[in-house]
Length: 95
Image (cartoon, rainbow, N blue to C red; front, side, top):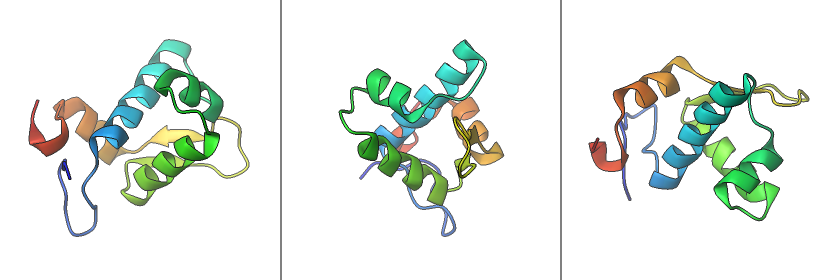
């Protein structure tokens, strides 16, 4: 399985999770607010909101995003997630 900056506290991130993280960042920059789950479904080509929710939960467990419960578009990239995006690293540590 591909990895990006794994540590004992933060498990490896998959290629697809990195794609989701990059998409969240891009949509936030384009729209000026975090994307909705349904918006992510459409952009990522995932049919089910549960599929996107699974990826978001994994990113949250890995400390790359924060989600505010009961808040529409309550999705934020953490400092760790931002560092990963700024490093421009792909899965396996490749640029």
